[in-house]
Amino acid sequence: MPEHIPTTHELETPTAIQVVDLVRDYPRPRTSLFQPAPVVHALRGVSLEVKQGERFGIVGESGCGKSTLLRIIAALDRATSGTVIVEGTDITRLSDRRLRFLRENLQLVFQDPMSSLDPRMRVRDIIAEPLVVQGHPASGERVRELLEAVGLSADAGDRYPHQFSGGQRQRISIARALAPRPRILIADEPVSALDVSVRAQVLNLISDLVDELNLTLVFVSHDLSVIKHVCDRVAVMNAGQIVETGYTGDVYASPQHPYTQRLVSAIPTLQRALSGATTSDLLAKGDPA
Amino acid sequence: MSNVLTVRGLSVKVRDTELVSDVDLTVGAGERVGLIGESGSGKSLTALSVIGLLPEDVYAAGSVRLDGVDHELIGADERRMSQVRGRDIAMVFQEPMTALNPTMRIGDQVAEAVLIHKTKPKSAARAAAAELLDRVQLPTDTLRAYPHQLSGGQRQRVVLALALANDPSLLICDEPTTALDVTVQALVLDLIVRGVMDRSSALLFITHDLAVVATVCERVLVMYGGRVVESGPVTDVFTRPRHRYTEGLLAASDLDTTSRRLTTIPGNVPPAGRFPSGCVFRTRCAYATALCEESPPWSGDEAQGFACHHPAGVADA
Image (cartoon, rainbow over all chains, first blue to last red; front, side, top):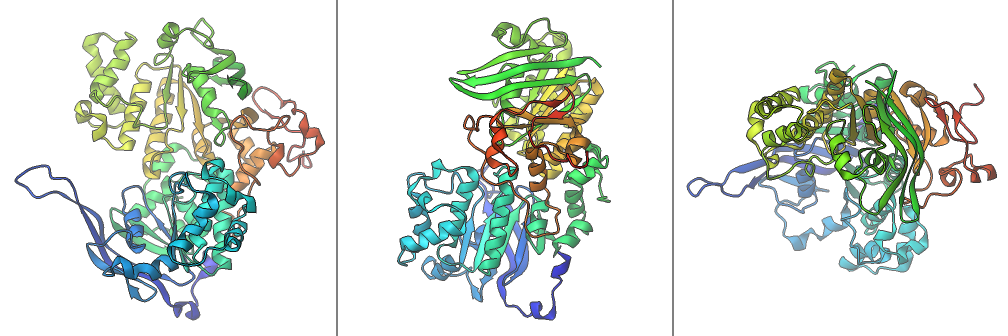
């Protein structure tokens, strides 16, 4: 957003996440006995820097590598080459045992609230699990506090995930992510599965919590208009590379890279439609007016 | 303008639960009508009742008539429905992955659509399939491909080619681009609109995305809790909403606001069949009063109107 142009003060804020020249290749199944297995280049040299307290968006279409990038930043997957530095520590070469600091400081919210919550656990146990796993006392007090923070009633803890609607389940996911008091929150398409009227509630909730708890937010979405609302800066990914980075307002208003231009012009908006834009205008290349 | 599709008093029930109540809907020749609503609003069930593909145990009542078909579509037996389906009414589904037969080549599937209704002789079916695929901008090699060899967007274009194969008088699209990327969505939407315009077919377009409806359609019906709560031309409904639900939905989807906080509709969409009696929106509505426990009557006419006791925009009317 324009009002978030960095001052010199902001430039001095420490870096939360630094990604340098990250490459991830996946081997595919062999198709021939005599030839090496073909390789998918999921990430081809991605570099980015997220400052502490920043709201950073990553936008791209399916298959562009945004989820692979997230998985490597969260150390759920290993890079082929390149480094990821989270709060000053290079996590790319660390063993699983030494990643504990990362598990406490960096937490994830996934897209699908149906499959990311264990259907056989009560909500209070789901929320307390990150604490238990990391050896903290999981008090009922803390769980109630978390439920309240995400706008659920205290008795919600006694129920099971299937008793909640999609938006409420996403609130449970957020409460679980916040349990170990992380400093970095990574949200992977957190509102893509939600209805419009509920989407606004969850976006507001994420926004409020990031402000209150001084979190660094990395928000991944295929929807540039959602990113534009939530984030200060955005990186546009295409085919395993970042093609454009900038302040969300600038990228949205005057995209520089041809891919970003195509992406921006393809987004249907009410304003454009009501002023007479038709489906063929969505295809218009270049000028995104 | 004659109406291609006329739906009167449609209701859909599963056992004792009413999922869709009293829906009236008309689509004129060459007209593009949108049906918007969130999950559980009954928009898909409305479409499935029209094409006669409701799941077992789910029953529709009311009247659905299609211009050029001399019988009632609700309750018509399968033999008669299968002659209508694919020839007079065609449908594009949300999931292009499950809408195609994985064991048949694309060319054979498209040709089958023509052959099954005998609209083209056998000798011409192949050429017709090639032409249909060409119209959705797929290369000729696609004829020999199997569905798994195509991307989601390509598959959806094949489904569209299938749907348009017999020049249907009504095309129903149920969230056709929800599973697609935005740049692919733009292409598929354009092909749908051009497909129906070339044939002067009527289009019934179902989605939850207000911006997509505004781009594709001329008229829109807003559904909530199994009822049509508002209808009218796209420009009127989206600039001067009357029903409080439409008003809330528009505000909640406006991501262009300069404020950090978005306007929200409180509460959640109730599960299907658990909507309150009277006005279905009253439990989430800030304007609800005791009056709302009675079902609000329809104000306005067939083409444009709303059902709300406390409509928006009264002061300036």
